[in-house]
Every structure is written in C-alpha cells, then in structure tokens.
Image (cartoon, rainbow, N blue to C red):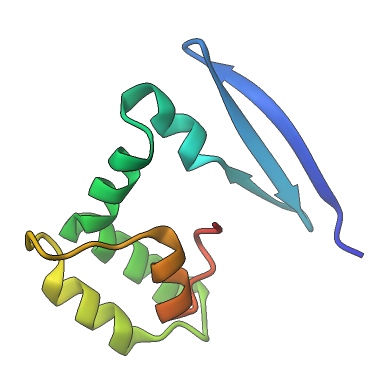
Length: 101
C-alpha cells in the first residue's frame, strides 16, 4: 500500500499543498497559481513552447514510457492561438509522470 501523506507550507500568504507518495514529493501547481490567475494561468503555461520543451526533456530523461511522438506534435502546435493543452490531456497523450492531475 502506498505511503500517501499531505502537508501544507505557506509562501507569501498562500497555502501550498505538498503531497508525498512512496518517497516522492509533489507541489500543487494549482495552489501556487491561485494568487496569479488560477487555472487560466496553468492553461497559458501549458500552451507555452518553452514549458512544453522543458516538460518533454524531463520526461525523456526520467520516463522510459514517454510517448515522444505525441510530444513532438504538441511542440509543433505550442504557441498557436488554436492550441490548448491541459495537464490531463498532456498526461493521457504522452504517458507523462512528471505532472499529476
């Protein structure tokens, strides 16, 4: 059974959740973004080409099941007005492990 644990830190008046699972810690991006625009900020961040390149490189290094072809498709479309990407869509399409939703 996984060892799940949740704690909270306070950064500049914002409560940010930290989830621990099997020795790995995860910060809540949603909590961090609340002060600056909430979910809309996350969606804008996910549309950014530099963000996708960072996420893709991280996954290539740490995730043997990462679907690089799907990543390449997203990277080509990143930044275009019609391009929209959510963390759930990223995870489902690429089998990403660096972000949890």
